[in-house]
Length: 485
Image (cartoon, rainbow, N blue to C red):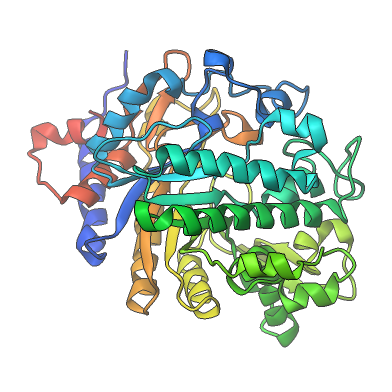
């Protein structure tokens, strides 16, 4: 039997709800602004062997011993492959006007603008087996062919394309630390059977950038005019604050951003790697040919940012231990200073609530990249899910509501300062398989009971719906319904 809230506790929730929507509302954003939710195919789809589906890198990796914290995999996940119609109705009930998903499995949705990612950490295992996937330049041709099929078959219904998700994090996790498939690394970064953590991240990033460029070039030359869509790339984007108020740490924070973001954005906007990276890593960074630089002149239409946290950066240029230097940027990163956290901690390791970090990040992108349009393609709050956490506590996710409210408020400040921000997507629509955390972390606006696949709206789902559709007053007898209907 479900736990019943008392009228008093319901009243607390209701007052929290009303106060939260009072400080930020839909009218503070442009009418054309996209508000949505985000998912990815492997994390929610399931149906791993259905309809002649080929194996992906994650299908193989998650079945290797010790790779996933709770020993789980995405074979079933949220069973979205069969329950997608129900999940579309969840989105309609929220009132979102866009849905970001990846097209490894693609369904184009009515009444909601699809915001489609071509590759969200997954790639056919066949390409890994045949030539090493992103380690080989052959992947550029195959990615281009895959993108061509997607543009041709779905482009009449898709107006927002993303080539790669978190392309700057993918080489680090897969080829530097070895925690994502194919699990390649060397000491001191990790303990893998194969790999080279000092070289392979830069080779794979180079192939990702050129794969992206091939897709962009094809779309702009052959599809964009007639399909009237836009195309961009999504990067994982932390904000870095200097650890100390000294010149060296201010430079270190900027260097950390350069090695994390400009590494990819400079080539796809300006046509080459950042000068600072070329100066530090001239022997590691592959060079773009004149033909490749010409292809890179066809720029992205927008930049997608997945933002969750802010951390401190401290210079260690002359004292770094390689394994502790963030992305080889010769900085030490930390979340504490003088015994105090940079922000309120969350259940997700290394994620802290620092709303103004989003504003600073957006303004940095605005200034460096000529106010290229920006979408916040992921932003969300995790809950720890284990046997000691009651479902009722997971449904009463007021911390998530406060997080979303504070970050949206920060985003409005960036917009008022002139940043061309055009959309915001909550991660995620539903609880799902969170990569190496398995099912131990829940980011969803809707709770998923994995044993039954039942979806239940959390308090945050109700908040997001009221935020998008406008506040509604409730009589006392409906307070409990408001909290957990």
